[in-house]
Amino acid sequence: MSLENICRALKVTLDASGYTVSVGMRNAATPTPCIVYEINSATCDMRMSGPTGLQHWSIDVEVACIASTVEEVTQMVDSVLAEWQSGPVNNTTYDCSLVMGSFAVAFTTDSPEDGQQDGTRIGTISMTLLVQED
Image: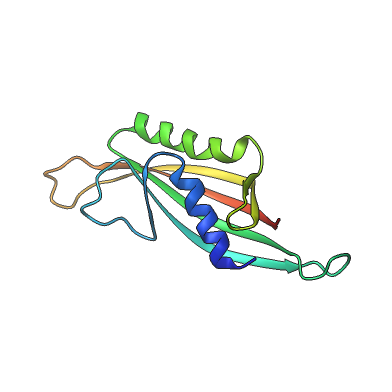
């Protein structure tokens, strides 16, 4: 199981939320509501007993839910979290299972510098995913 496959499985899971998803940063032309995510760190533990070579990963991810209103943001946060709260996300295409170990949510407003437009509301989910090779 590669880190690349884990990244792809994460993107597929976020795509299932029904919102436009991008990695790293939001392009100015991307309409809201949308999701921007980034992996902050990844740690791999190798299993040494039993079948060798099995990998267990711990992935720290930030998922920014961006919308025009607080109500939209909270709905987006709920939609994203629902993907993991019902149990492990098994991705047979990329041979891994993603389990949410923990999460926290912070809300902010991003105000444009020109003062001519409304700000966007952002709900940032900081989560730790435990990933196991299938």
